[in-house]
Image (tube, rainbow, N blue to C red; front, side):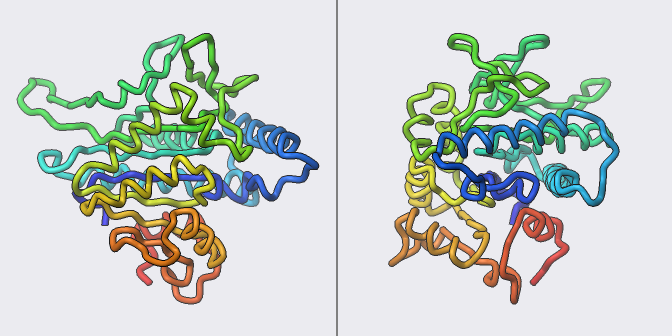
Length: 304
Protein backbone atom coordinates (compact mmCIF):
# COMPACT_ATOMS: atom_id res chain seq x y z
CA UNK A 1 0.00 0.00 0.00
CA UNK A 2 2.83 2.42 0.80
CA UNK A 3 5.43 1.44 -1.76
CA UNK A 4 5.88 4.05 -4.49
CA UNK A 5 3.12 6.29 -3.13
CA UNK A 6 3.24 9.78 -1.67
CA UNK A 7 2.35 8.79 1.89
CA UNK A 8 0.78 11.07 4.47
CA UNK A 9 -0.39 10.25 7.98
CA UNK A 10 -2.91 12.25 9.98
CA UNK A 11 -2.49 11.31 13.64
CA UNK A 12 -4.84 12.42 16.40
CA UNK A 13 -5.03 12.12 20.16
CA UNK A 14 -6.38 8.58 20.08
CA UNK A 15 -3.00 7.36 18.81
CA UNK A 16 -1.34 8.20 22.15
CA UNK A 17 -3.80 6.23 24.28
CA UNK A 18 -3.59 4.86 26.92
CA UNK A 19 -0.62 6.97 27.97
CA UNK A 20 -2.64 10.15 27.38
CA UNK A 21 -6.43 10.23 27.73
CA UNK A 22 -8.86 11.77 25.30
CA UNK A 23 -10.39 15.15 26.05
CA UNK A 24 -13.73 13.50 26.80
CA UNK A 25 -12.12 11.26 29.40
CA UNK A 26 -10.77 14.14 31.50
CA UNK A 27 -12.78 15.29 34.53
CA UNK A 28 -13.78 18.91 34.92
CA UNK A 29 -16.77 21.22 35.24
CA UNK A 30 -15.86 23.32 32.19
CA UNK A 31 -13.92 22.91 28.94
CA UNK A 32 -11.27 25.29 30.24
CA UNK A 33 -10.69 23.13 33.33
CA UNK A 34 -10.59 19.93 31.26
CA UNK A 35 -8.19 21.55 28.80
CA UNK A 36 -5.90 22.60 31.61
CA UNK A 37 -5.89 19.12 33.17
CA UNK A 38 -5.25 17.50 29.79
CA UNK A 39 -2.38 19.87 29.05
CA UNK A 40 -0.89 19.11 32.48
CA UNK A 41 -1.03 15.37 31.75
CA UNK A 42 0.52 15.83 28.32
CA UNK A 43 3.24 17.97 29.89
CA UNK A 44 3.96 15.35 32.56
CA UNK A 45 4.20 12.54 30.01
CA UNK A 46 6.37 14.62 27.68
CA UNK A 47 8.76 15.55 30.48
CA UNK A 48 9.13 11.84 31.22
CA UNK A 49 9.95 11.28 27.54
CA UNK A 50 12.69 13.91 27.75
CA UNK A 51 14.63 11.71 30.16
CA UNK A 52 16.53 8.50 29.65
CA UNK A 53 14.75 6.29 32.16
CA UNK A 54 15.03 2.52 31.75
CA UNK A 55 11.83 1.37 29.96
CA UNK A 56 9.25 -0.26 32.21
CA UNK A 57 7.21 -2.98 30.40
CA UNK A 58 4.26 -2.30 32.71
CA UNK A 59 4.27 1.44 31.99
CA UNK A 60 1.57 2.78 29.67
CA UNK A 61 3.96 5.51 28.60
CA UNK A 62 6.73 3.06 27.66
CA UNK A 63 4.29 0.75 25.87
CA UNK A 64 2.92 3.66 23.85
CA UNK A 65 6.44 4.83 23.08
CA UNK A 66 7.39 1.32 21.90
CA UNK A 67 4.50 1.44 19.41
CA UNK A 68 5.69 4.79 18.06
CA UNK A 69 9.29 3.54 17.82
CA UNK A 70 8.15 0.57 15.73
CA UNK A 71 6.00 2.88 13.62
CA UNK A 72 8.95 5.14 12.76
CA UNK A 73 11.18 2.12 12.03
CA UNK A 74 8.61 0.74 9.57
CA UNK A 75 8.46 4.10 7.78
CA UNK A 76 12.25 4.24 7.49
CA UNK A 77 12.36 0.71 6.04
CA UNK A 78 9.67 1.62 3.52
CA UNK A 79 11.52 4.76 2.43
CA UNK A 80 14.71 2.79 1.86
CA UNK A 81 13.01 0.56 -0.72
CA UNK A 82 11.64 3.44 -2.78
CA UNK A 83 12.87 4.47 -6.19
CA UNK A 84 13.43 8.19 -5.73
CA UNK A 85 13.14 8.69 -9.49
CA UNK A 86 9.44 7.83 -9.38
CA UNK A 87 8.39 9.10 -5.95
CA UNK A 88 10.17 11.25 -3.34
CA UNK A 89 11.73 9.42 -0.40
CA UNK A 90 9.57 11.43 1.98
CA UNK A 91 6.73 10.54 4.34
CA UNK A 92 4.67 13.29 5.95
CA UNK A 93 3.25 12.91 9.45
CA UNK A 94 0.60 15.50 10.29
CA UNK A 95 -0.11 15.25 14.01
CA UNK A 96 -2.63 17.31 15.96
CA UNK A 97 -1.08 15.96 19.18
CA UNK A 98 1.22 18.18 21.17
CA UNK A 99 2.91 15.39 23.08
CA UNK A 100 6.47 14.34 22.22
CA UNK A 101 5.96 10.66 21.42
CA UNK A 102 6.93 10.98 17.75
CA UNK A 103 9.97 13.13 18.53
CA UNK A 104 11.15 10.64 21.17
CA UNK A 105 10.53 7.68 18.82
CA UNK A 106 12.60 9.41 16.15
CA UNK A 107 15.41 9.97 18.66
CA UNK A 108 15.36 6.30 19.69
CA UNK A 109 15.70 5.24 16.05
CA UNK A 110 18.61 7.65 15.59
CA UNK A 111 20.31 6.01 18.58
CA UNK A 112 19.92 2.67 16.79
CA UNK A 113 21.96 4.15 13.92
CA UNK A 114 19.02 4.28 11.54
CA UNK A 115 19.90 6.36 8.48
CA UNK A 116 17.30 9.02 7.73
CA UNK A 117 16.50 12.73 7.97
CA UNK A 118 13.96 14.11 10.43
CA UNK A 119 12.48 17.48 9.52
CA UNK A 120 10.20 19.17 12.06
CA UNK A 121 10.11 22.44 10.11
CA UNK A 122 12.71 24.31 12.16
CA UNK A 123 16.22 25.47 11.40
CA UNK A 124 18.93 27.02 13.52
CA UNK A 125 21.25 25.71 16.21
CA UNK A 126 20.75 27.26 19.65
CA UNK A 127 17.49 28.86 18.56
CA UNK A 128 15.57 26.73 16.08
CA UNK A 129 12.87 28.78 14.36
CA UNK A 130 9.84 27.18 12.73
CA UNK A 131 9.33 27.99 9.06
CA UNK A 132 7.03 26.01 6.78
CA UNK A 133 9.38 26.61 3.82
CA UNK A 134 11.80 24.16 5.44
CA UNK A 135 9.49 21.33 4.40
CA UNK A 136 10.33 22.12 0.77
CA UNK A 137 13.97 21.14 1.28
CA UNK A 138 15.46 17.78 0.30
CA UNK A 139 18.82 16.27 1.22
CA UNK A 140 20.84 13.89 -0.94
CA UNK A 141 23.90 11.71 -0.37
CA UNK A 142 26.51 11.95 -3.12
CA UNK A 143 29.17 9.56 -1.84
CA UNK A 144 32.71 10.18 -0.67
CA UNK A 145 33.93 10.78 -4.21
CA UNK A 146 30.74 12.50 -5.39
CA UNK A 147 30.20 9.73 -7.91
CA UNK A 148 26.45 9.26 -7.32
CA UNK A 149 23.48 11.07 -5.82
CA UNK A 150 20.87 9.35 -3.69
CA UNK A 151 17.99 10.99 -1.83
CA UNK A 152 18.14 10.30 1.90
CA UNK A 153 14.94 8.88 3.44
CA UNK A 154 13.13 11.77 5.13
CA UNK A 155 10.29 12.02 7.63
CA UNK A 156 8.47 15.34 7.91
CA UNK A 157 6.62 16.07 11.14
CA UNK A 158 3.99 18.79 10.79
CA UNK A 159 2.02 19.76 13.91
CA UNK A 160 -0.90 22.06 12.97
CA UNK A 161 -2.05 22.36 16.60
CA UNK A 162 1.40 23.12 18.02
CA UNK A 163 3.45 21.23 20.58
CA UNK A 164 4.49 21.35 24.24
CA UNK A 165 8.04 22.12 23.11
CA UNK A 166 7.00 25.12 21.00
CA UNK A 167 7.64 28.62 22.33
CA UNK A 168 6.25 31.78 20.78
CA UNK A 169 8.19 35.04 20.89
CA UNK A 170 6.53 37.83 18.93
CA UNK A 171 6.02 36.59 15.38
CA UNK A 172 8.52 33.75 15.72
CA UNK A 173 7.92 30.20 16.94
CA UNK A 174 10.87 28.31 18.41
CA UNK A 175 11.06 24.52 18.63
CA UNK A 176 12.98 23.60 21.77
CA UNK A 177 14.26 20.21 22.94
CA UNK A 178 12.43 20.50 26.26
CA UNK A 179 8.86 21.15 27.37
CA UNK A 180 8.05 24.87 27.46
CA UNK A 181 5.90 26.75 29.98
CA UNK A 182 3.84 28.27 28.54
CA UNK A 183 3.82 26.34 25.29
CA UNK A 184 2.28 27.34 21.95
CA UNK A 185 -0.71 25.11 21.19
CA UNK A 186 -4.31 25.12 19.93
CA UNK A 187 -6.43 23.75 22.76
CA UNK A 188 -9.33 21.35 22.02
CA UNK A 189 -12.08 23.78 23.07
CA UNK A 190 -14.46 23.36 20.15
CA UNK A 191 -12.96 26.34 18.31
CA UNK A 192 -9.91 24.59 16.86
CA UNK A 193 -10.88 25.46 13.31
CA UNK A 194 -11.06 29.18 14.09
CA UNK A 195 -7.83 29.18 16.12
CA UNK A 196 -5.96 27.11 13.53
CA UNK A 197 -7.08 29.26 10.62
CA UNK A 198 -6.37 32.58 12.31
CA UNK A 199 -2.93 31.58 13.59
CA UNK A 200 -0.46 32.20 10.78
CA UNK A 201 1.89 29.34 11.70
CA UNK A 202 -0.95 26.87 12.13
CA UNK A 203 -2.49 27.94 8.84
CA UNK A 204 0.82 27.36 7.07
CA UNK A 205 1.00 23.85 8.52
CA UNK A 206 -2.46 23.06 7.18
CA UNK A 207 -1.64 24.59 3.81
CA UNK A 208 1.14 21.99 3.55
CA UNK A 209 -1.41 19.31 4.41
CA UNK A 210 -3.76 20.38 1.63
CA UNK A 211 -0.92 20.69 -0.87
CA UNK A 212 0.40 17.19 -0.20
CA UNK A 213 -3.05 15.67 -0.70
CA UNK A 214 -3.39 17.33 -4.10
CA UNK A 215 -0.56 15.32 -5.70
CA UNK A 216 -1.18 12.27 -7.83
CA UNK A 217 -0.55 8.83 -6.31
CA UNK A 218 -1.08 10.18 -2.79
CA UNK A 219 -2.24 8.13 0.18
CA UNK A 220 -3.65 9.49 3.44
CA UNK A 221 -3.85 7.23 6.49
CA UNK A 222 -5.77 8.57 9.47
CA UNK A 223 -5.52 7.10 12.98
CA UNK A 224 -6.75 8.40 16.33
CA UNK A 225 -8.47 11.40 14.73
CA UNK A 226 -12.23 11.93 14.92
CA UNK A 227 -12.47 15.05 12.69
CA UNK A 228 -13.91 17.35 15.34
CA UNK A 229 -11.65 20.03 13.88
CA UNK A 230 -14.04 21.26 11.20
CA UNK A 231 -11.29 22.98 9.23
CA UNK A 232 -9.34 19.75 8.78
CA UNK A 233 -12.57 17.86 8.04
CA UNK A 234 -13.38 20.27 5.22
CA UNK A 235 -9.85 19.93 3.86
CA UNK A 236 -10.19 16.15 3.65
CA UNK A 237 -13.59 16.49 1.99
CA UNK A 238 -12.03 18.70 -0.67
CA UNK A 239 -8.96 16.49 -0.98
CA UNK A 240 -10.92 13.33 -1.87
CA UNK A 241 -12.19 15.13 -4.96
CA UNK A 242 -8.73 14.29 -6.28
CA UNK A 243 -9.41 10.84 -7.79
CA UNK A 244 -5.73 9.89 -7.50
CA UNK A 245 -5.79 10.26 -3.70
CA UNK A 246 -6.81 7.30 -1.55
CA UNK A 247 -7.73 8.07 2.05
CA UNK A 248 -8.00 5.38 4.74
CA UNK A 249 -9.63 6.42 8.00
CA UNK A 250 -9.13 3.85 10.78
CA UNK A 251 -11.92 4.19 13.34
CA UNK A 252 -11.47 3.37 17.00
CA UNK A 253 -14.82 1.54 17.18
CA UNK A 254 -18.11 1.20 15.27
CA UNK A 255 -19.66 4.23 17.01
CA UNK A 256 -16.66 6.29 15.97
CA UNK A 257 -17.30 5.31 12.34
CA UNK A 258 -20.80 6.79 12.39
CA UNK A 259 -19.57 10.05 13.91
CA UNK A 260 -16.73 10.39 11.39
CA UNK A 261 -19.07 9.71 8.46
CA UNK A 262 -21.33 12.50 9.72
CA UNK A 263 -18.43 14.94 10.17
CA UNK A 264 -17.14 14.18 6.67
CA UNK A 265 -20.65 14.56 5.26
CA UNK A 266 -20.72 11.09 3.76
CA UNK A 267 -23.50 9.29 5.65
CA UNK A 268 -25.51 8.77 2.45
CA UNK A 269 -22.74 8.41 -0.12
CA UNK A 270 -19.01 7.87 0.36
CA UNK A 271 -16.49 8.62 -2.42
CA UNK A 272 -14.80 5.52 -3.80
CA UNK A 273 -11.39 6.81 -2.76
CA UNK A 274 -12.42 7.43 0.88
CA UNK A 275 -12.32 4.27 3.01
CA UNK A 276 -13.79 4.75 6.49
CA UNK A 277 -12.98 1.48 8.24
CA UNK A 278 -14.41 0.16 11.49
CA UNK A 279 -12.32 -2.35 13.48
CA UNK A 280 -14.30 -5.36 12.21
CA UNK A 281 -13.71 -4.23 8.61
CA UNK A 282 -9.98 -4.59 9.20
CA UNK A 283 -9.60 -7.53 11.58
CA UNK A 284 -12.32 -10.14 11.91
CA UNK A 285 -14.02 -9.89 15.30
CA UNK A 286 -12.04 -6.80 16.33
CA UNK A 287 -13.94 -4.28 18.50
CA UNK A 288 -11.28 -1.61 18.94
CA UNK A 289 -8.57 -0.40 16.56
CA UNK A 290 -5.56 1.41 18.03
CA UNK A 291 -2.15 2.61 16.92
CA UNK A 292 -0.54 -0.73 17.72
CA UNK A 293 -2.95 -2.45 15.31
CA UNK A 294 -2.00 -0.06 12.51
CA UNK A 295 1.69 -0.65 13.17
CA UNK A 296 1.08 -4.39 12.94
CA UNK A 297 -0.61 -3.99 9.56
CA UNK A 298 2.09 -1.69 8.20
CA UNK A 299 4.73 -4.15 9.39
CA UNK A 300 2.95 -7.09 7.76
CA UNK A 301 2.19 -8.79 11.10
CA UNK A 302 -1.57 -8.80 10.58
CA UNK A 303 -2.81 -9.90 7.19
CA UNK A 304 -6.44 -10.46 8.14
